[in-house]
Length: 294
Length: 251
Image (cartoon, rainbow over all chains, first blue to last red; front, side, top):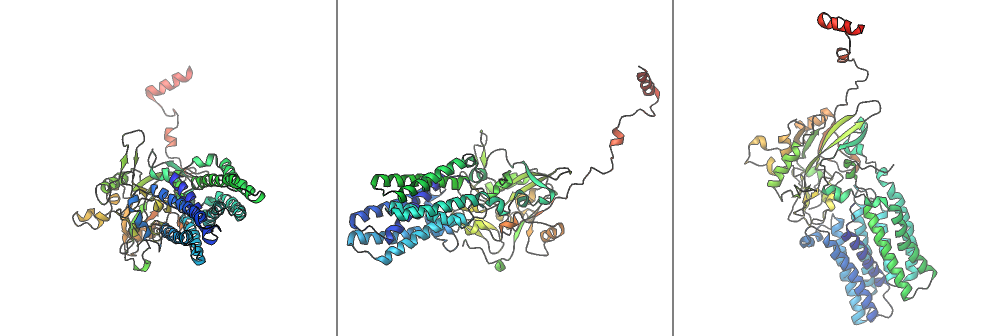
């Protein structure tokens, strides 16, 4: 799949924002007041920036409000509704702490729950797509939630919790990569089932419909990611998981080291997210001569 | 609206039957489809940089050509038209966040309401067949409408009230009808020829069916018809050629 920068920015930033909201909802900073104001503003800015970035991806952003209408059937619609609800509930929760100095635990928990549900919905947008076997897995929403919660914990300064979440994330990411590599082959969809010509032997594309490129090839048969995939995975894992987990669990990071930890995790997440799109094989590629790795 | 209609409530399942045995790969249906659909229902089908180095166009119907090979047998070339299959369980419909993408209750046609489409592209991702293309100029999702503006159009002669691709196919490889009606010609054709679904394992339950090409006759052990006539030999040559044959033999 084409790794659109708008989608990488959106999923990374909004994931961090909603992860931060989850921690600020359950366990707001004890100092209250201004500290909470700064954290809450950061969370809302990250989630908001992510949502704005997602609008770049649309052909007609002026109609985006219509996307809130189909929450009964569409995960994309649910994500939009949940994101708005989360930001509203969390905004109220934060405003009460900052302005009135009162913490309503129930409201905070509701904000946290909604934040996690929003990220689950983001993951389900991808996991529901059977045509992209690498994404069509329960690990997809799990990974989105773990990236969000681990990043949110680190941003909220919950370093020990964040460290353990990073370890869980690392395990899930390794499992995701391992299973993902075999997903297209395991899906049972091949050039033979795509054409129904399997009974005549192995099917090979002789001539493409057009000599040039088209929307389908640009959007869904992206190949650049494969070449450096192994190196990029190593970089993503080192930056997003290994380095921040080591700092979080083996040291007692203060501000400078804490900043390094967060930046490293975010950079690694961006690389991992790029791979998430770039490595995903859409079965339409089978009509264009792409095959599962042997 | 983006929920799929209840299957029992769908009156008809209009769709195409494509005969892979007959298709000659001339691309006439591609051109005819583009012409009709760029000048009628909905936004026109863009052609970006049409005479430049990298032309890029929107098409609702594309023809692939495949070759199948079995060890010890001759290769077989199959021309393969591909457009929207108007699936019963259309994944492109349920993913739509705005309700722009829908499957009609009365005839099962899958359509896009372009004024509600935000151009997010998720329906194109959800379709395993690559039947949807985002228009490069209008930024809305385009797909086969089964020529909904022809099949019910009382302003055109009755003979033309079928999809443009079917009307134009010079080989008669494309058939249109109600695939839920056991008395329809398309239903009988599918029964008789063993029509099949594309990617049945994707669970989309396509309405459109494909008819398999006949396996190519294995000629390796058959009688050699032309060979004896083409073989060299001068037996029985008389007259000038006979003399020339003997003279050249003596040299």
